[in-house]
Image (tube, rainbow, N blue to C red):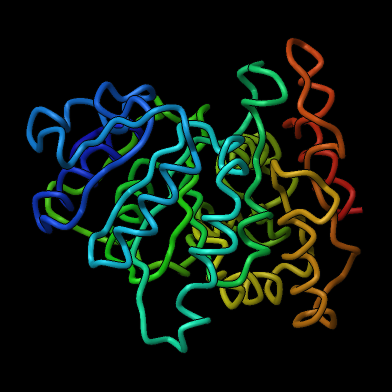
Length: 320
């Protein structure tokens, strides 16, 4: 095992997949320099034909990725900030998501749309969103949200090898997070949740940065409440079976997500638990998510985004 930062784990996954398959290439704004570090120095090994800088045009990036995927390439399109993926909405939500279906499953579209997500850096409303529910809502798109270096590398490799469009969102606040990964190659199948901490009293389902907030709460409440922390890792496909099995054991649930509370990921997971495990619940499910408000800049951000104290209160509420 070796210790590595999350952003370096993504970089390593990209390098390994580009070495393994010459059809894999990267396209995006400043990918040759690597603004956040995910694509840094890949141009030295693979050259400008496979690490392609583009103008500031998200639509062009997504369109080129979709078109080349149709011809057999496996592009990784880097948007830097997920906030700006909406600009390329037609290519992502209409073209990429539906292409395989409107052609009767006869064509594959193997591509990855990669971007950072999340707040807590006080970057304002246009650089801090967590738009995962938009992608989870769209049939035809797979969605990955890693929370550790191990997951970031294994999921990126699976995303690149998948024959369908995969949206890969990684949190800006976790770029420098260190963790152990194997020296040898490994992948993590999409749709396989991970139990980050086993417990008996409350099931807490959390993604991205919220996984680490929840683990801190679990530590603080040790001796008072035993939290089972589940990280879905991929939201589409969603490993609801692992979540339901945990709910059957604990009978109490908190769902934590950085997306907005209204129509967010937490709402979807809550609904599925209600449909499949209502009889096992000993208390109403609690939800912790961002307020229905654009993410403000500066200190006001703390009043909109989920905080550790909110997770703790939700756990105490379901515990009664």
